[in-house]
Image (tube, rainbow, N blue to C red; front, side):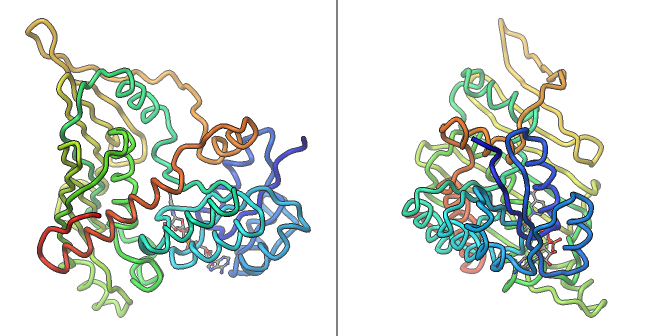
Length: 349
Ligand SMILES: NC(=O)c1ccc[n+]([C@@H]2O[C@H](COP(=O)([O-])OP(=O)(O)OC[C@H]3O[C@@H](n4cnc5c(N)ncnc54)[C@H](O)[C@@H]3O)[C@@H](O)[C@H]2O)c1
C-alpha cells in the first residue's frame, strides 16, 4: 500500500495539519483548498503542494480523481458540517477541527453520515496529543486516582480575542465565543481523563461585559460571550466545573488548568508561564503523609492527532476523539448556552 493521500481545507490551523500529516512517513498532503487566494498560494509554495483549489467544495469534488484517503476540515466553524459530510460522502476519512460543529444537531448529522459511509470521523481535540496528557491518562487508567468525583477545567484569557472583528466573534459563523472556542478543549480534556461519563444536568452562565464594549469602541462586529462558566453533573455522581474566557479581569494573560480529584489521588494539567508549555502533577496520601509528584518530561514522542489517525487507518484499530465524543461535547455546549439564556439548570436527555 502506498502513502495515504491527504487533502487539507482551510489554511490557518490547516497549515498545522499539513505539518502534522507531513511527519508521518506513510502520509502525504497532496491537495489544499482555501478561498483566500493569497493564502492558498503562500501555503502551497511553503509546503510544495501543487494541487490547489479555491474552495473546500472544489477540493472535495476532485477527491476521487486525486485518490484522496483523508480530508482535514479546518475552516470557520459554520462550514464544518457541510464540508465534513461532503468529504465522507466522497469516500474519505475526515479529521475535523474543534468545535465539531455549530451545535449538537449538526454534530449528530455528521456522526450519522460517518456511520452510513463507514468512514472515520475524528475531531481535533489537540490537547490530548502531548506527553503530559498521555502521562496523566496512563495514571488515571492505572487507577492511581481511585474514583474521580470532581474536576475543574479552565482556560481563561485576560484579553485574548482571536481574529478580533473576524468570524470568531460572530455567532452565525462561530456558533459562540470562548466557550465553543477554548472551553471545548478543556471540557473534552476533563471528560477524556474521566472516561467520558454520561452528563445529566448542566448549569451555565455567560457574560459579555468587556469584549463587546471594546468591539463597539473599535467599530467591530461582536455578538458572542466573552466569558462562560458551567457546572456539569454526571450519572455516576461526579461533577465538572468549566470556565473559559477571552476577556476577564484576572492576573494571567493565559491560564489553562485541568484538575481532577479522586478518592485515592488528584491530578493537575496546567500551562507554564502563561504559555503553551504544559506540566503535570499528582497529589496523594500514603502512610499518613501527603505527597506532590511532578512529571519529569522524558521527551517521549506522542503522535499528533494527524499521525494517530493515519496509524489507526493503517493498522485498522479504533481512533480516539471520535465523532460520538464530539457529539457529547456539542450537547454540553448547547446545554450551557441554553441554561445561560434561561437562567436555570438544563437536563440532558
Ligand atoms: N485544535 C486547535 O488547537 C485549534 C487551534 C486554532 C483553530 N482551531 C480551529 O480551526 C478552525 C479554523 O480556525 P483558524 O484559526 O485556522 O481560522 P482562520 O480564519 O485563520 O482560517 C480559516 C481559513 O478557512 C478559509 N476558508 C473559509 N471558507 C472556506 C471554504 N469554503 N473553503 C476553503 N477554505 C475556506 C479562510 O479563508 C481561512 O483562511 C476553527 O474551527 C478553529 O476553531 C483549532
